[in-house]
View 1 (spheres, rainbow, N blue to C red):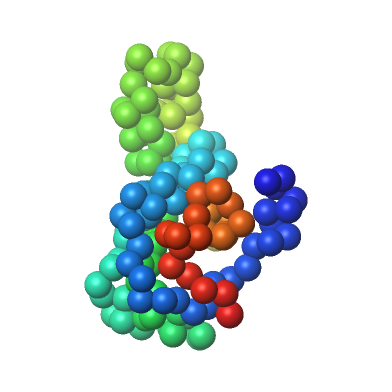
View 2 (spheres, helix red, strand yellow):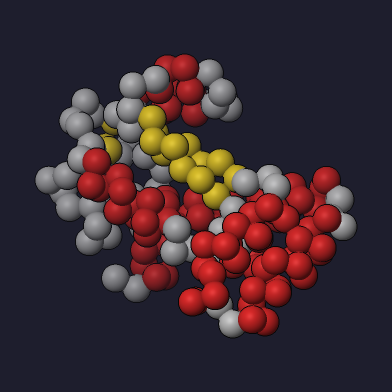
Amino acid sequence: MKFLELNKKRHATKHFTDKPVDPKDVRTAIEIATLAPSAHNSQPWKFVVVREKNAELAKLAYGSNFEQVSSAPVTIALFTDTDLAKRARKIARVGGANNFSEEQLQYFMKNLPAEFVRYSEQQVSDYLALNAGLVAMNLVLTNQKSTKFWKSKTASAQNS
Protein backbone atom coordinates (compact mmCIF):
# COMPACT_ATOMS: atom_id res chain seq x y z
CA MET A 1 0.00 0.00 0.00
CA LYS A 2 1.27 3.46 -0.84
CA PHE A 3 1.92 5.91 1.97
CA LEU A 4 -0.73 8.35 0.70
CA GLU A 5 -3.36 5.59 0.63
CA LEU A 6 -2.38 4.45 4.12
CA ASN A 7 -2.79 7.98 5.48
CA LYS A 8 -6.15 8.42 3.76
CA LYS A 9 -7.39 5.20 5.40
CA ARG A 10 -6.06 6.17 8.84
CA HIS A 11 -8.76 6.38 11.47
CA ALA A 12 -9.18 6.55 15.21
CA THR A 13 -10.17 3.32 16.91
CA LYS A 14 -12.71 4.12 19.58
CA HIS A 15 -14.35 0.81 20.45
CA PHE A 16 -12.65 -2.47 21.28
CA THR A 17 -13.58 -6.12 21.58
CA ASP A 18 -12.54 -8.33 24.49
CA LYS A 19 -10.34 -10.36 22.16
CA PRO A 20 -6.80 -10.59 23.55
CA VAL A 21 -3.96 -8.97 21.65
CA ASP A 22 -0.97 -11.19 20.92
CA PRO A 23 2.19 -9.87 22.67
CA LYS A 24 4.13 -10.50 19.43
CA ASP A 25 1.81 -8.07 17.62
CA VAL A 26 2.41 -5.44 20.30
CA ARG A 27 6.19 -5.89 20.03
CA THR A 28 5.99 -5.63 16.24
CA ALA A 29 3.90 -2.46 16.45
CA ILE A 30 6.44 -0.88 18.80
CA GLU A 31 9.31 -1.97 16.56
CA ILE A 32 7.63 -0.34 13.57
CA ALA A 33 6.94 2.81 15.60
CA THR A 34 10.61 3.13 16.55
CA LEU A 35 11.55 3.34 12.87
CA ALA A 36 10.19 6.91 12.92
CA PRO A 37 12.72 9.66 12.28
CA SER A 38 13.85 11.74 15.23
CA ALA A 39 15.73 15.01 15.57
CA HIS A 40 19.46 14.33 15.94
CA ASN A 41 18.59 10.61 15.80
CA SER A 42 18.02 10.96 19.54
CA GLN A 43 14.98 8.67 19.67
CA PRO A 44 13.95 10.09 23.07
CA TRP A 45 11.04 7.74 23.62
CA LYS A 46 10.09 4.83 25.79
CA PHE A 47 7.03 2.61 25.63
CA VAL A 48 5.11 0.98 28.45
CA VAL A 49 2.61 -1.73 27.56
CA VAL A 50 -0.37 -1.73 29.91
CA ARG A 51 -2.62 -4.78 29.93
CA GLU A 52 -4.16 -4.90 33.38
CA LYS A 53 -4.31 -1.41 34.84
CA ASN A 54 -5.94 0.46 31.99
CA ALA A 55 -8.58 1.89 34.35
CA GLU A 56 -5.85 3.51 36.45
CA LEU A 57 -4.03 4.76 33.36
CA ALA A 58 -7.31 6.11 31.94
CA LYS A 59 -7.53 8.57 34.85
CA LEU A 60 -4.57 10.38 33.25
CA ALA A 61 -6.22 10.52 29.82
CA TYR A 62 -7.81 13.65 28.43
CA GLY A 63 -11.53 14.01 27.74
CA SER A 64 -13.12 11.20 25.78
CA ASN A 65 -9.87 9.23 25.79
CA PHE A 66 -10.83 8.01 29.27
CA GLU A 67 -13.36 5.53 27.86
CA GLN A 68 -11.02 4.40 25.10
CA VAL A 69 -8.10 3.69 27.41
CA SER A 70 -10.19 1.97 30.07
CA SER A 71 -11.85 -0.36 27.55
CA ALA A 72 -8.76 -1.19 25.46
CA PRO A 73 -7.33 -4.69 25.87
CA VAL A 74 -3.84 -3.17 25.58
CA THR A 75 -2.60 0.40 25.89
CA ILE A 76 0.82 1.41 24.66
CA ALA A 77 1.86 4.46 26.68
CA LEU A 78 4.53 6.67 25.11
CA PHE A 79 6.97 8.56 27.32
CA THR A 80 9.79 10.89 26.38
CA ASP A 81 13.25 11.04 27.90
CA THR A 82 13.51 14.62 29.21
CA ASP A 83 17.26 14.56 29.95
CA LEU A 84 18.43 15.12 26.39
CA ALA A 85 22.12 15.53 27.24
CA LYS A 86 22.14 12.22 29.11
CA ARG A 87 20.24 10.62 26.21
CA ALA A 88 22.89 11.78 23.71
CA ARG A 89 25.68 10.32 25.81
CA LYS A 90 23.77 7.04 26.15
CA ILE A 91 23.51 6.81 22.35
CA ALA A 92 27.30 7.13 22.15
CA ARG A 93 27.81 4.47 24.81
CA VAL A 94 25.36 2.03 23.24
CA GLY A 95 26.61 2.67 19.70
CA GLY A 96 30.20 2.58 20.84
CA ALA A 97 33.44 2.73 18.93
CA ASN A 98 32.51 -0.30 16.83
CA ASN A 99 29.55 1.46 15.21
CA PHE A 100 30.46 5.16 15.33
CA SER A 101 33.35 7.10 13.89
CA GLU A 102 35.38 9.27 16.24
CA GLU A 103 33.52 12.28 14.85
CA GLN A 104 30.12 10.71 15.62
CA LEU A 105 31.20 9.81 19.14
CA GLN A 106 32.34 13.40 19.70
CA TYR A 107 28.99 14.64 18.37
CA PHE A 108 26.92 12.54 20.77
CA MET A 109 29.24 12.81 23.78
CA LYS A 110 30.08 16.52 23.67
CA ASN A 111 28.43 18.56 20.91
CA LEU A 112 24.80 17.54 21.39
CA PRO A 113 24.88 17.68 25.21
CA ALA A 114 26.35 21.18 25.00
CA GLU A 115 23.58 22.20 22.59
CA PHE A 116 20.81 20.66 24.71
CA VAL A 117 21.99 22.43 27.88
CA ARG A 118 21.31 25.76 26.15
CA TYR A 119 17.69 24.83 25.32
CA SER A 120 15.00 26.67 27.24
CA GLU A 121 12.25 24.68 28.92
CA GLN A 122 9.97 25.55 25.99
CA GLN A 123 12.56 24.37 23.43
CA VAL A 124 12.95 21.04 25.26
CA SER A 125 9.17 20.67 25.34
CA ASP A 126 8.88 21.44 21.61
CA TYR A 127 11.75 19.08 20.77
CA LEU A 128 10.15 16.24 22.71
CA ALA A 129 6.67 16.95 21.32
CA LEU A 130 8.01 16.83 17.75
CA ASN A 131 9.77 13.52 18.32
CA ALA A 132 6.85 12.00 20.25
CA GLY A 133 4.50 13.05 17.45
CA LEU A 134 6.60 11.29 14.83
CA VAL A 135 6.83 8.01 16.73
CA ALA A 136 3.15 8.16 17.73
CA MET A 137 2.10 8.59 14.10
CA ASN A 138 4.11 5.50 13.14
CA LEU A 139 2.38 3.61 15.94
CA VAL A 140 -1.04 4.77 14.76
CA LEU A 141 -0.27 3.79 11.18
CA THR A 142 0.70 0.25 12.23
CA ASN A 143 -2.74 -0.12 13.79
CA GLN A 144 -4.65 0.25 10.57
CA LYS A 145 -6.55 -2.82 9.42
CA SER A 146 -5.50 -1.86 5.91
CA THR A 147 -1.83 -2.58 6.65
CA LYS A 148 -0.33 -6.02 6.19
CA PHE A 149 0.76 -5.95 9.84
CA TRP A 150 -2.73 -6.22 11.30
CA LYS A 151 -4.37 -9.22 9.73
CA SER A 152 -8.10 -9.44 10.24
CA LYS A 153 -7.72 -12.54 12.41
CA THR A 154 -5.49 -10.74 14.93
CA ALA A 155 -6.96 -7.26 14.91
CA SER A 156 -8.74 -6.56 18.15
CA ALA A 157 -10.15 -3.17 17.35
CA GLN A 158 -13.47 -2.37 15.76
CA ASN A 159 -14.12 0.86 13.96
CA SER A 160 -16.80 3.11 15.29
